[in-house]
Length: 179
Image 1 (spheres, rainbow, N blue to C red):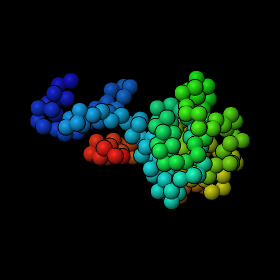
Image 2 (spheres, rainbow, N blue to C red):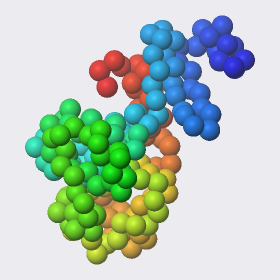
Image 3 (tube, rainbow, N blue to C red):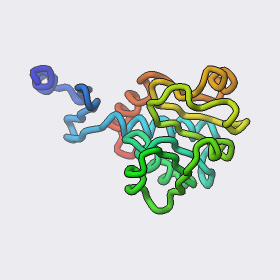
């Protein structure tokens, strides 16, 4: 708390803070909180959008409907994509927009989608045998969901980093009300 008070007293405009459960940026000028989960979902979708040359009217599979996945889903809907979701926890599916199509079997769904957002914290479950041959993947989850073979095969078509995209998107959202 003393670090926050010191930052405010010294005139900081944007303050990044984290505890065991949450990572936020606080924009003191607008009294706005930007959550890393929301920023990460938006940042990775934005990166996928640019890698794909746009996503309007394209089908995008989001794996995982946690906080990052929900943010990705919402941003994809803003971009007028056809959002598809695979989520193991059926309770999380109850809160999705009715326009979102639910996929019930991941290995059957994967080959159908060229554009994928893997918003899970699961390691190595995305195998080369199930992915679309031209798949483009935005993978904010840590650890990476791709198997080693899939990672090597799709290395030029993967967006993944340990923290940078979410943090820079938090900053952009702090500076720009339209992000």
